Image (cartoon, rainbow, N blue to C red; front, side, top):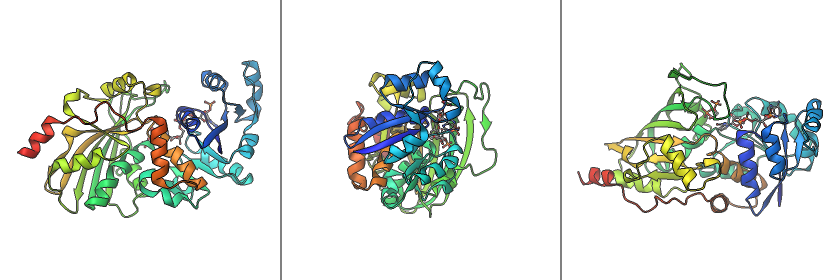
Length: 355
Ligand SMILES: NC(=O)C1=CN([C@@H]2O[C@H](COP(=O)(O)OP(=O)(O)OC[C@H]3O[C@@H](n4cnc5c(N)ncnc54)[C@H](OP(=O)(O)O)[C@@H]3O)[C@@H](O)[C@H]2O)C=CC1
Ligand SMILES: O=C(OP(=O)(O)O)[C@H](O)COP(=O)(O)O
């Protein structure tokens, strides 16, 4: 059993902890939290030993009636691997703690790429993490782009990728974020950090990215334009390649899923925990070919798409399963890949091919 400690139990940390607990070869040895709020209460109710991320605030946990198992130092010492899911920049400050205990660690996409030896995506470069002690799981948007680009890169070659990222303003629990009535270039300069970040996964890829923020908490939405090196036979060939990817959910036109709202409703109806959508969500109708130019739109659930990647990165660091074995086990245990939309045809796309 791989003993996993989770340092930072927020949006990402709590999801990673639950996903780790679902694995037959892993156990959660504890989670570190800074504030004794409702999320900390949830951790105790879920049965996770709670450790203090900040010793100076330990007395606040006692006052709130939350028993602590110790300080984060003890959690790191007892873990085989630590998943650091603290806010951007804090992970880098924590790295000396992991080094001190000789404990391998994962960092998240809010950290600079220099925080770790390898930036990770399970579909593309699992093997590179096998010899590493410190791995960074790239951000939600970068994960979504890497999954989408991988089959295109492998099968056709990519001359150039151009992506506009319509970014959610904040997560549902981030009550202070916005905008609340605007569409804001973010960043206003081009490229956004996502292009260079994708290049930490595909070092030779030519990609430009543009970002803006809008007033929603649900999902990010990408418009993607890829100039392929070799022309596919037709658009259904692309659709079928995307369909065969384990962490891409393709949405047929009949489904009536017209945006992030219906996607979230679909996930809740399907009984997904917290309404999470671990897969990229690609609208089949949007897949369009003009010669070697491919156009497409996809939605990315920012709170959850990196969760299976964290699970696979833990295995990569521990080195006891291959990438395909790990991905398949993670998918099976979390329920990734099953969709009640499977096997249904998209009328519009088939018409487009017939034309
Ligand atoms: N949210 C998202 O959409 C995504 C986030 N990421 C990345 O994941 C990482 C975590 O983000 P997210 O889960 O959203 O963050 P949250 O703010 O939701 O959670 C952060 C957690 O870290 C704890 N924490 C805060 N400050 C410290 C500190 N100084 N030392 C130790 N622990 C601390 C918080 O504790 P407390 O609440 O008790 O203060 C909380 O438990 C970031 O790198 C982010 O960029 C990646 C993909 C998507
Ligand atoms: O990793 C994320 O997005 P990103 O890929 O735009 O950096 C998360 O959605 C966090 O984004 P935030 O930096 O807007 O909180």
